[in-house]
Image (tube, rainbow, N blue to C red; front, side, top):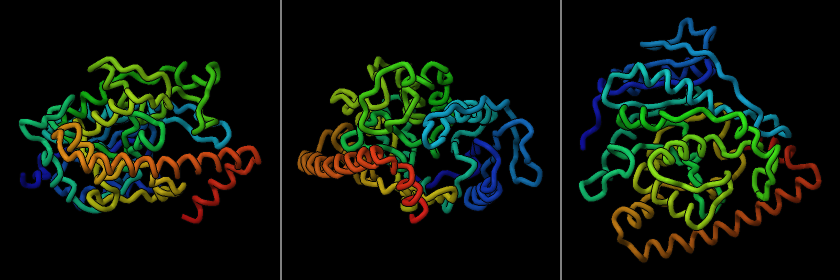
Length: 326
């Protein structure tokens, strides 16, 4: 199909107004010149001088601490509130949900929309497959985080985005789940919520469509790995950061913790699509599974090193050093 006219697109720019928001809006105006820009942020935000078409101000629901050691906050409810408020103003056929601290570097991603939707390979839970970024779409065969699909940007039919975000907020009990529940995870050892933000969004949506048993963020059972792969293959198209998807995340380098190996690349996604949607390329599928085993070994060695650094109380210092040198 030809590229979608930008006059048929609305962009929901969601999140706090910060040092990158002006550049974010300028980049969207440059590469999606006729798109409607909807800025959805918080009451009392400094929006003077920003380039947008519609503004919606919501009461900030606040974040909750998700890691008391590193001081990182869980902002999933902020994402849900600001995105829903912006989507309520969308009247165009297509919509791009976009973080307010991202920069767009081109509209080539539009060429990928609809490319994998055919009468025989229809989307499973949407009218058409959504476009998402490979950062941070986790490969559950390598890192035990099922249903972990990137939420940086999402593009698709407006009705599909409204369906995706028509989910409840994360309950307070689940935001601090591991204060009262035993954890046996080898990753995110200081993590408090039951699910990471990406899982909270997509699991909440999927559970409205079908029964899924997933007890916590590291519940990567063989069944959940298969369900995750099927969901990825049949509901989205994963595009690689700065390749098919011209994005820049100036807030921090995406690969700052050297964990790109744990992500699902576009090439990986094509193999999932061939296996779960087309039911072909058995040789490619076998090679893919062997590749995942090799990357799993690397991941296991890395987690062992992280646990060792944790015992020496050097984990956070090492994370900060790696982040600064990336």
